[in-house]
Image (cartoon, rainbow, N blue to C red; front, side, top):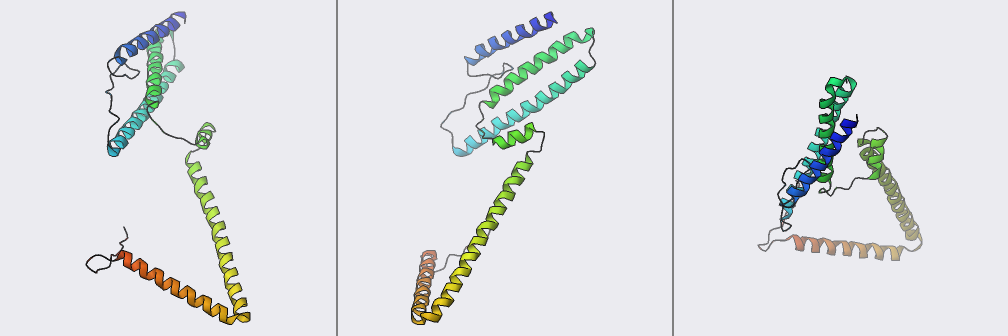
Length: 205
């Protein structure tokens, strides 16, 4: 096993040296491949595409890492001294891919809620977080709707009570509201009118 540790340490040093050498020319991944530099003066569309491309690179690296871990598990579960070189090679490949994944992840600006991370650590489906958020929003919406309905009921009750005691004032109030509503409707129609006199029609998509 001492030879195995020395092999891994030497491989790490060689990987670091190759990273430094290739980084002078423009940047590299953990596997020594050159990564072209992108300009910061790109359009929003190209920036979004570049961000999605970086995210896909991280996803691919994660999938590759999982595959390497599975291969390493198979090698360890059936290990015998004849498989020592294959074991070291797979350990080396896993170390290199983890290093590459970390470097790719540093280029992605993604905010992940800690609740999602905690759910994954607990072995639960992260979709439960989305479900809980939606159910929480539905609950708050029901509470807000209840308050709104209560205020509407209170307004109706107050108008009925005021109409019995102050009918003239309530009538003037209702006429004022009707006049204001008609004026607002007229302004809205004027804003939606086209220069040729036609009315702009809102279409549902």
